[in-house]
Figure (spheres, rainbow, N blue to C red):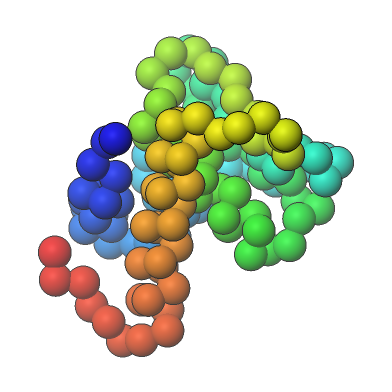
Length: 124
């Protein structure tokens, strides 16, 4: 498994933010919010040099942040080629890439919530 904690820590340190939209902007990823059915949570699309994350705007704001963090994890950990990825509800078991994206989102959101709830200043 990739060193996800270190990747998240380096992102926060480099860009001085835990906000997934701000991180996506720094990384050149365009984030859009579009209406989809409840089944589709979000999409990641990379076409040539352009990267997009599209989040279902019908979801609760908190869920949108989780989905964005998860898909941002995929964009950094798994996508090196022209790719289309949709995160949907599924009955199929999750693989290692899904688990890694979940860990990335958890690390990012945990740091984000810690910084929001306190005057905590990271020392890394």
